Length: 57
Image 1: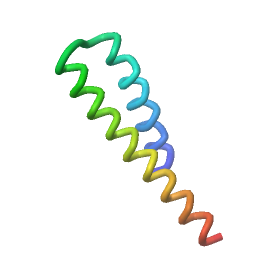
Image 2: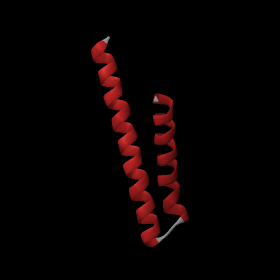
Image 3: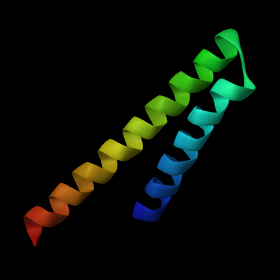
Image 4: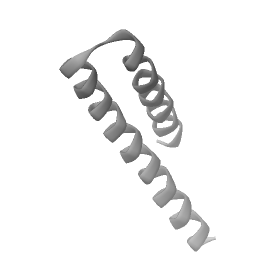
């Protein structure tokens, strides 16, 4: 699960960064919002899993 979350985070960040160069207008905004939310969700999930793992060990 953790490698998949890291991959999702990195891909979302890469797409978010490149979307500003590849798209314009509303399409760029929608792609940035979607990939930004995906990056936030995977980052938060990784942080929560890390804290839970540290608390149990």
